[in-house]
Length: 137
Image 1: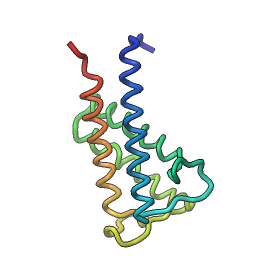
Image 2: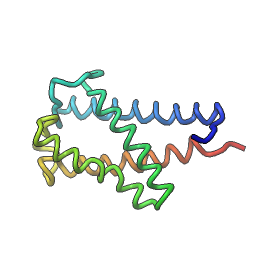
Image 3: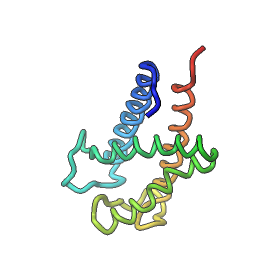
Image 4: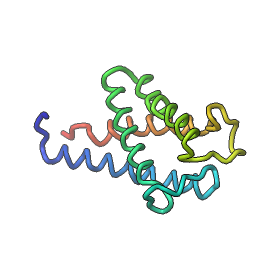
C-alpha cells in the first residue's frame, strides 16, 4: 500500500464517518416512515442493521473509485449496480421487505425511489470525496 500522510488518513476517516452517519439517518427515516422492514436477525443501531451501514460505506467508496477510474456516469451508476443483486437476494432470503405505497415497485418489490436514493448516494459520495480529499493549498 502506498504511504499516506496522517492528514490523508484523517480525511478518509472523515469521509467514512460522513457516509456512516448519512446511512444511519436515511435508513432510520425509511424505517420510521414504514417504507421497509429489516429481518430481526441483524445487529442494529437504532433499528438500522450495521451491515446496511457498512454497505453504504462500501458503495460510497466504490462509487468514488469507479468515478476516478472511468467517468461520472459510471460512478453515478455504481450504487444502483451494486444494489440490484442485493434486492434480488433480499427478496428471496427475506433480509428486508418493501412496504408498498411510496412508489411503483420495479425490481423484486424494490420501488423506483430506492434506485433514486442509490443514485444520490453515489453522487453524494463523489462530491464528498472531491471536497474533503482535495489537497488544501
